[in-house]
Structures are given as structure tokens and as C-alpha cells.
Length: 222
Length: 83
Image: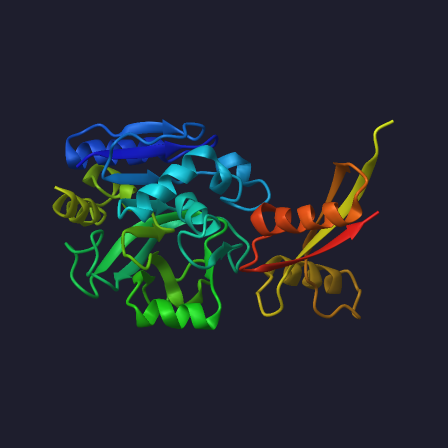
């Protein structure tokens, strides 16, 4: 499985993503600068967490207009897989590659802690190695992670089984609509989520619940 | 002297979209003794200077700017004022 991690100015989880991919796939991902307009030949593109462009205007808004995003969209349009974590999820909604928007946390505080999630959907290349309803713990670290979409969009996401992860009961850290933590695109080849699976692939870092996401990708893409 | 236009764009949250910042501002104002304050909604103002003097063209361009970048129309609405 060949992968690339996009690096925006003020990305800060790009190295976490790189290390996790190296550890899980045995291959070093390409690190692609936001001004590059071409992507290397890869199976998976990762949009990492961080504060791209200083979160100016809105989180992910400036990044969504960067040169590299045209290629990321083209990659996804051809069926290529794209994983957006945290700021990466915000970039995906700002790019309209995923519906809805991520807004200021309901409690107005930056929340940085492990949260309990339920894997809601296992019929995807990102989640096939999990059990349906499996409880996992991923860390979150964001100030703007409250998922919002109109009722019609939320109903459609649920009707099409596109809610991949939900915050477990009592664990919603940000006021997200219907406890949504991560969603899939219509073609199910793009996943955006606020929690960080790449930070839980090694016991040393406090957990391994994120490993199955990478195992799923490896199985899907090799 | 080359001609230019000045524009002001107001970006606000759509009705029904929760605004926790606005709510916090409202609470703070109530706490300061401004008991008359009810709902508060916060938004943004962006001032732009545009070259040229064709107001219609500028309005069309500004609308495109709002749709493409300045506002996120999933959650926000915008108003354009041309001076």
C-alpha cells in the first residue's frame, strides 16, 4: 500500500501520520507539500491534523483552496482513498468532499482527551477489520469539532450507512449532531473523523485501537 | 489615479445554526448587568478594496468570492455592501 501525507503550513500531526503509516505498512509515505499540484502514484492520501494556515477565516477553509487539493479531489473522484483526521476532516468538509461543517465546540473549550467511540459502520475500506458496534478509544484534540449538517443531510448519512464512528453514550466532547465522530463519502472511499486513530497504534502511546483502521486499509489496498 | 471600489461583506450564521460564542457573549453581558440582552449572534465583517469602477461587475465577483471562500454556505449566509 502506497500512501502520501499532505503537509500544509501549520499541520502538526503530519509526522504522527507518517510514523503510524510506516509502522503499520512498513513503507514510508510520501510527504507532499500543499503547493505541489501533483500527487505521486499512491493508493491512500492522508490529510493530517493541525491548524492549517493558522485556522484563518475558518478551519480548513484556506487549505481547501490550495494547489494540492485539486489533485486530492481528482484522486478521490477516480476512487482513490482519502483519510482526513481532525483538521483533515475540516479540510474535507470545506472542500465539499464530505457534507456538513465542523463548528466551534459546544462548550467553547479546546478538548484534548481520549474519548470512547462506537464503530457504527464496518462496510468500508477503512473499518472492515472492526466489529459492528465495537467500542474503541481514540484521543481527540480540537476546538472546532462540532459536526453540523441540516436534518436532511443527517438523515441521508444515516440512511446510507455513512456514519462510520459515533461518540459513545455520554462521550460526545463537542456537541456534534447525532454524536457523529466520522463520516464516509457517498462512494465510501473518503473518511473524515475528528478523533485521531494514528495516535493509538502503539501501546507505548497509550493504546492500539487505531490499528484496525490501518489493517483495514492495508487489506483493502493490497 | 486608478479607480477603485470599497466593499464590506457581512458573514453571519444561518438561522438554526448553534452559536456557542454568541451565547457566551450574551451570558457575559447579562453578568455585567445588561439584563435586556436576549439572544446574541456573532459574525464577521470583511472589508475589501477592488480595482475598477464597474459596480455590477464587482457585485458579481464579490458574490463568487463569498460562495467560493469567504463564507461556508453550509452554515453561513452573507450580505454584500458596496461603497
